[in-house]
Length: 125
Image (cartoon, rainbow, N blue to C red; front, top):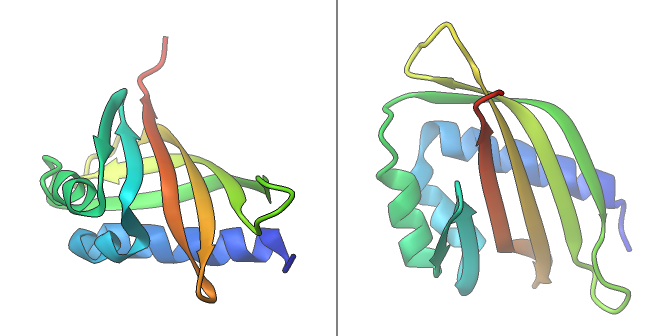
């Protein structure tokens, strides 16, 4: 397997830069059988996931990744499990939100797509 940490870094750099600038372009990273769980609500399919991300109730967002961990997720397929934590700056708010996100990446013709994606905000205790 290629350097899975480098693949995870390249993927997350692209994902968050795209999310922060042009959310509708993320649809190409998902497939009809992909699933996103956003704050406990499951959404299946590339079109439904893209719609959810585009319709989120903020105009401006910036992701600041603080941790990134990756590991192979299958002994037979070059898939990856990527776990991210960080800060989310929304609509120029001075108070960032903590978030965590888990991606399961599956190889597809020299690139990867997102099979599973779990996103959570940490609202504190």
